[in-house]
Length: 212
Length: 205
Image (cartoon, rainbow over all chains, first blue to last red; front, top):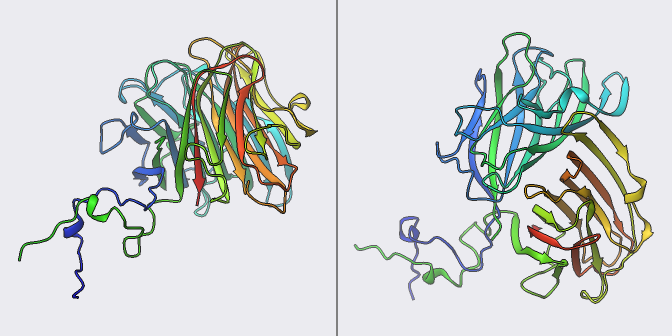
């Protein structure tokens, strides 16, 4: 019997394949910095969707700024589709750090990185990220149930940076957007700037986690 | 020549598509939704739950809302199919918190929430508020529960609305000190029900 071989076009109508397990973590959008003042994910724009999944994960890869020590990587949310990024946040930040020269080596609470109902950019790093060509920030941010109209919106993040003073700095940030309105946009931007700073390079990927 | 197109039914028995054998390494297994529930239990062999296929399991918590103020979101495990949830655990617990008023903020080890071979519930979120918008969200990793040689490690992190009101970031880790297979995991509150919220179970392939 001759073997019937199918090509991509012949299986174009197939959306599932029985026993093949489907992944629960779905890629939604990738943004790549190129001298960018911010990187923004807005619901309804360019396939971004903040309402279909109960949990979203943003992953940061080698976010590199233009100015040594003058910026930290941060974010804010919007409840008006990106017109304003100024939602009240209460948050915590702890950091551990250790120098390339074996200096430091500590775990502390960092009051410079928390907020008490603040509407500023929420820092994801304590201390300034280094601007040397090989220095950057990587990590991830979990955002829970942003489309809820009942609960505050929890977030939890972990990052590591190669700091301007040549420390490895590991930060854990968590808290909540204190609103029952839905979060429909997220902006990632420099969180502390004394001079003009942009993200020269780096990638942020957005994923949705299924619950069915 | 007309093309023969396949439908979903036409490939229903397929277990691989050429070099494609799966569409991701994080596999959804089960969701439980609280509705004034005293416990939420994932039991191997029940309702599609399987604790033997993967080396790592991930539970996610989404907006766990308590009935009773200032109680502890917790879990325990079973090695007898859910008949008893009382396996010895040794663990650590630390947290960072910050009041909405800005009046207090710190990171601290919490001796009251760790266990030293304790068989009771393991706290993973403390003093949760019960305002309508208060809840706990987070995750718990459980490593190799079906192993029969070593202990079973777990790592949890939760973001909590504490009643004060306060943002709390809680870190819990430890091991289930048993070489028997863990075949059920149960979530509860230290007192009162889980009014609402979802817990999902995933396997990490």
